[in-house]
Image 1: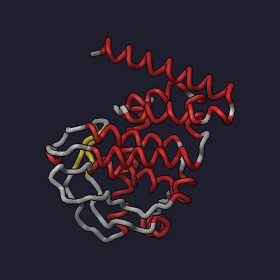
Image 2: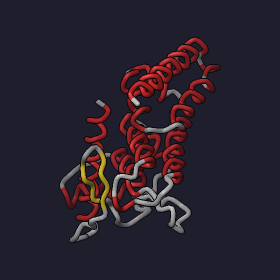
Image 3: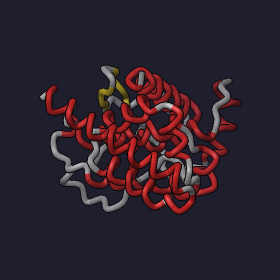
Image 4: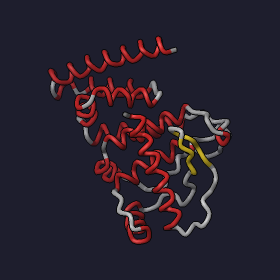
Length: 223
């Protein structure tokens, strides 16, 4: 289920990259690529720090496709994840395609954005293309976790609702991320919110810990 959702997000990333190249008048799409969910991806390597609202209008006018702001926010996160970063790079900061403030993120908080962060975390661990033989992934992981922390700050009960609405899907996202940082952050977030609703969040913390224990046990048997 989560794998299929991730494939759909990757396909949307590819589509948005194509739209942006058309809007910017790029005749030839760069061949630098990655592979995720078995899909070959030509990475977006166009302008950075763009106005996302202008991009939405340009895409609708020039490509006839109406996107939502949340689509561009997820694209932003995935682009960082797919590009990774070279361990030899002198670049000290992550360059985003779109300039996204907290107000825009708040409008875009969704399961899809969470999954985009999980994809970026997964990619920070991957060495599956010839383009990225040397990288440590730490900048990508830090960036993705910053986005998750911002989501949690802007909507404090979002992850609790996402977890309780579909425990299996949420835990599959955790597993998909291949991240140690993510489950640590989630359980800490749930515990910090116990004063908001002691009964609910204590139950959520207990259930999440049980699910993580089963996930680790299954991982041990699989390996």
